[in-house]
Image (cartoon, rainbow, N blue to C red; front, side, top):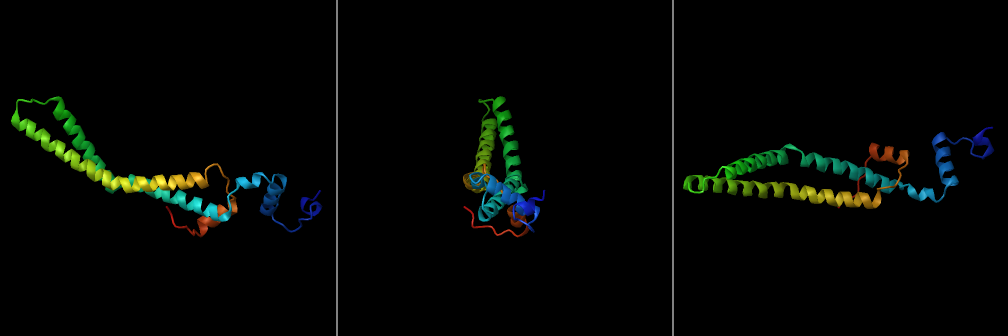
Length: 152
């Protein structure tokens, strides 16, 4: 039996037949699929989230994080062996503590905009894309010719 002929769908490709069958067989399920515009947004947000993660783990933030961790460990060791009767040692620990505070502020200033962006993108992605299906043709179109909307 020829499916195309028996259903009057002669000339349609397999993808069109599959899409038609899914939509005809379960109209309620078709709402689980994102439209082309939302699929484009989801693909763009996925790409942006990957870039934010790369920036958070990149050399700029990484160098500050590494220096902060080094000074933080140095301060812990200094506190563990601190002789409170030695004024020079107390001043040294104070300078290390001040340096740690400066690095923490620098790290926060570097990471905060990226983390805020990640939260906004993740929220938008979860609200629109999570638990929804994307048609392959829309995903391919989004990858081949991204038309990313303004992002949060």
